[in-house]
Image 1 (cartoon, rainbow, N blue to C red):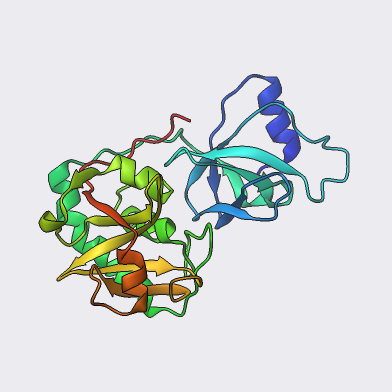
Image 2: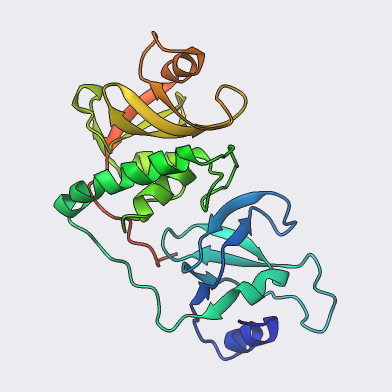
Length: 244
């Protein structure tokens, strides 16, 4: 476990320290600690950013520290009260880069994880990555991470990271993207036979994980997303984090 005082001491000595999550950890989108940005499953690593830290002698209830996760360089805010969920990592984070062939061989495991997640009682959770409740890109990222393949966190980042492919070339394990003309806002995992698995919200989805089809002939959820279809992509590399 770490304390605010130990983090302050590390900053004072100008040491770059990597911390490891002992348990699942919430990261928030602002120091107000109201809305999730993402989550970190036990074992992930992060770094604390900045030198403006709360006074360790003051009441720290509701205080937050700026941090960035090592595996995907994703930023967020950690509650000071959650510092006991962190420990100093034994070694700095080192990304593992898999070959395209290695990634392809892992795709059955990725799909199996996603199907198993769907089989559990769940609902859509903005920022969710640790299960059983996920957002769309959190489910995709975690499914690939279960096989040792790291992707960027958000749907628009995943769209920019993968190799674009035409819809006619879709294979199981590819990603399908949806959204507005100017921005990707949703992602799903292609299963084959025109079907994809995704975690969708309440507004035009099912408030959880389900399977839909890339067609105007599907159910209401399928039709709503197909009208927003942007394109497809194939994962051919691992994201190399630890740079942010």
